[in-house]
Image 1 (cartoon, rainbow, N blue to C red):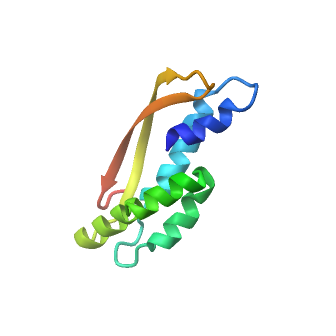
Image 2 (cartoon, rainbow, N blue to C red):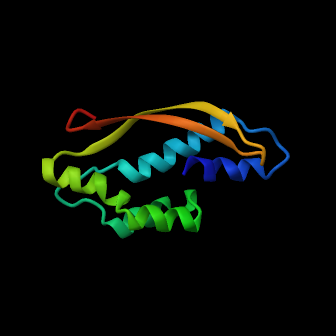
Length: 115
């Protein structure tokens, strides 16, 4: 997924700014995982609409088919606790021949009150 986001940067002649990549990833993952009201979480379709700008059509279809976007709402509903993304860390893995860059990322997610 992140490769697709970074691939957009690879198409330009500008160098990739890791801070830009981090901000895009933070926004994307926050849209995917934040559940403020566990008794009324967003639907899978609502989450898909929020993350759509960050993904290619192919990646969006694959993730949606694998029900990736229903993970956070299901957890929030089953535990009756809100979910929040606290932090996102990225690390450059490798630069590809096609100009894209692979990153690995780590999410810190908080389940429950105290936001």
